[in-house]
Length: 268
Image 1 (tube, rainbow, N blue to C red):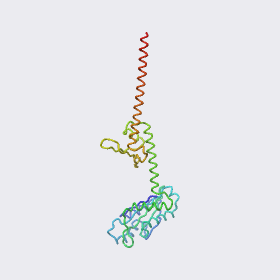
Image 2 (image 1 turned 60 degrees about the vertical axis):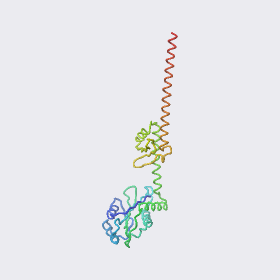
Image 3 (image 1 turned 90 degrees about the horizontal axis):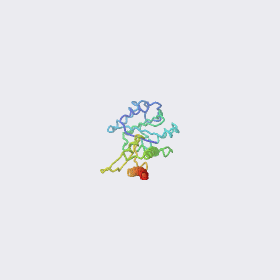
Image 4 (image 1 turned 180 degrees about the horizontal axis):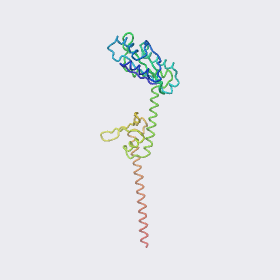
């Protein structure tokens, strides 16, 4: 489950976006009676007028369980998650409204909260995004849901598998140098980013697939800059050696034929 949060100055627009989406359903609210973004934001302003120094005077939060988890959850589960999330932020007594978006497979919650409480005090927004993620992580663990870290690890594993599979295919084609290697990786829709020292030596390598990046050494130790260069050089040496052996063998056979012909001529 992923949690996002930020302070905003456009509560009315955020509320209208959340409530007007197809398949949007209101989950919960506190200290507000209006329906539209304009009506609810006007109610927010009753307390926001007590603290005019705070410009970004509302919070916008998004809570997103995985597709698999959300399919097993009831509306009550989403209501309770919203409640727990706001309690951990110590915002459950502030004005807020929350909506469930289920217009796509990825069901998620939108919460718009008045940052100013009934005493005119503004809730700090320092690291609000990171705090939101940590709170979502704790709730996910408590409810036995997939955490953001688990999602990240799964995505990372998929990326590793894609890059490593392409790498093995490319190495099997025995590229003559790192540039040819990069060209062959490009055929698999993978961009190879190289970092060179002033002397031209390859000192770093990473890969991009779509909008995701990963270091070569994170995919496989054999795919670090140093080890990859060694593999390419080794393959090149083997290819040169084989070609040399073929050429030498061919010359030996040609010399044998010449000697046989010479011997035949002498006997005649």
